[in-house]
Image (cartoon, rainbow, N blue to C red; front, side):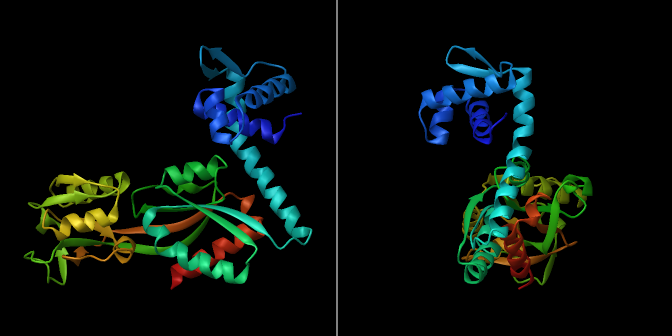
Length: 298
């Protein structure tokens, strides 16, 4: 019989490449990791790891087991949480992953409301941009993932295996220095910024920027690139270039020395909360999704 604790150890060994790395990740000793791996190999009746010096690599059977482990562990988590709710326990645990601008705007409002309504529910928060956040969900490493995709940039098949709760549509805005020639314009065609130096954001946003600019007939000269939205705003405010940011990101920082302008044509991204079908029925997860939807409607 395969035990869940053994699967967690196998995933940690596969991710870290050694028993010592897995032990550090799991907060246990290296002999304990080795013992549980031996027990797992005995249970399945075949080797799962090939030991080469200090490192480990998976056998074909090990790769197959790791591939299924995320779904198995997510299903077990869903079962445990639902059974606890049926048994009358007023408690729950939700692991939430969000991209930074969502963490500073939607998440605080949603979690404050969740705590007021369900004080026994515990929520942990980790930050990751999509597609990494979606990968964490599918791997069983979180219960709810906030994600986004740009209009027309991805097909609907990207999330067909997940429960999708739309939160809001976020429009991208231009960000220019306060003394810029277009700082007081009501709206700006992105082609009017073709000769400007640019400050780019996260890799996915950067790719979208290049795509939008290409549609307007130019390639942006990117002088600076950073995943940190306050840094983008600071660089623009210092007069070092212009940028395009989601409105949600601008709301999370004070744009000192910079002004926002509407872009034409409009560029939008869809903000959603995602979970696995099994987890959608867990009361704590369902309540978290509901509060995120309410936060997006405010």
